[in-house]
Image (cartoon, rainbow, N blue to C red; front, top):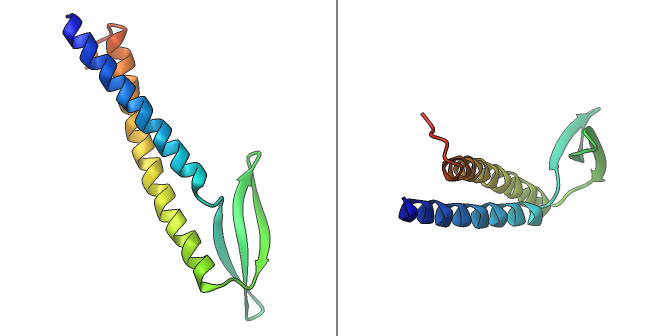
Length: 105
């Protein structure tokens, strides 16, 4: 039984380390996403994000193609890291429950 607990503890440590890495990568990405609005035939760009549970728009004006690409790429990366973080959090719950002696069905 001791060997199994050791393997579970090692798995938990690895999962916690991975979760920390994903959180750090998410923090590196630019905040929010870029939104294009058409108003009276003109294109305007806004930065969209949440602050204190409320949606905020910040006017960005004319935006270069590089900045548009940066936010599109960030959006893809954010989705990828959030999905990976969700999976690793499930692993962490499994390891913690197993170490407490609960059996999962």
